[in-house]
Image (cartoon, rainbow, N blue to C red):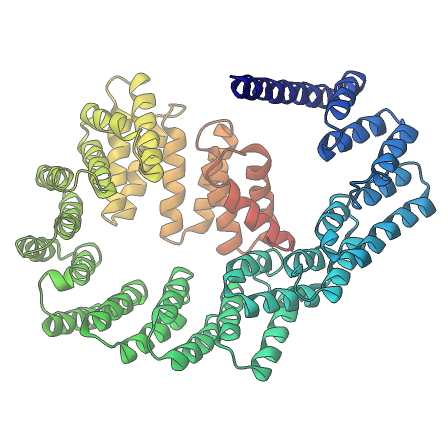
Length: 593
């Protein structure tokens, strides 16, 4: 019974202290320092061993400019039996607040001397120095402790401090030593390297890291240095140099081609097709299995599809046919066949042939997911061919086939989109309302955007005349009938001036002009949207597309910077905010973290 009562009192006491601490903290944050001090003094009296209460009391004294009281409290603790030597640093800070620099320096020296007696004190002393941004003293603390006791490891702290001090070579060397001793530090090191390394190959940090890695590689041919060099070259978008490193890595282990293939994807996504092709060809030459070789051929064909001119289309067809003759036209090559038939339909205009091929493929023995992917492409081509009802059947089959997969949600969105193209806005709206709660943020955003457009333009115009024309223009654009789409959009602007749909039309018009290379006309569309609808929902789209246009096509970086800046300051919740900030900083010449 006594034990139970004791435990009950202990719990009550702990809860009471916690409530008092929270109240004191709240008073401190509200600037009511006298009230905070009263509570903290009681807490210190009740818990003389609680260092956190002592330090909070010191902070309150300092806010009240009661420096003598703060000094007395710290000195009392330093003279007590259970002293904490990091309090010398707090005492030094108290002197600094009074501009007593010599006393502050002496207190800091006392802290450093404590390490001579016991190197293990270094962790708390160094951390306290860091808390007051005394980086030189913190570095000296950790370095001294490691000299006295080689078993101590403060390299993670030192590496970070060297970086903050601008001692980049020491930072890189320290991190590399860490990785050498413990490979698990690799991800931490690369994350910290990213704070200093940029895309700019002339950046000081890039040069120092490159030289450091090359020197180490010459002294010790460890594959880790090749991997880090490859990482550096990828940051600099020097994919050819990265390939040399990845090739060296592969030659060392002779088994894993993933580094080569990953590099190919990175180069492909950055439109460096030559580097991507080199990587995939090397992967093909060294693939150990037919399945691996097939996958790499498929990646290689993606480059062909992106780069081939119309004159080269027959050659692309022949290459696809050769691969399919070699590897078969069954489930094993289903992704290759999807890419091929997409090319036949959307680029070569052979819609019927593509539809026939995919219907045949859908009959093959496949997994549910593979079948769904095939039917998705088939349905997309049917929409492209304006065979809407057939397309809707396939999209519905996908939803039933793989209900829990994100592909099912994509199929539902395409049902809504197809209904929209047909002019069946009511049914489209029903589907979109469900998708607004989609697990996929991208699909949810797309659904929200289309739903909002349909609703806004139905309220103003019950006949939905302008909306039907706009849906037609979007379908024409999908079908690559860009000039016809432009004519329909121009007609909407002429006959529906001032209506809600005008901003949508101007944005779509700008995008099509960009697609067709009419960059000055695209600029005019975006500028008009900004002029008349700068407070509306599509304004950030216009600013972003215009900034990209100035940066990449019209080669007007100063104008690009101006429009990226508008997004940063006026559209903080925009989906383009992060990318706009990054591009703005790069154009301004900042180091990108």
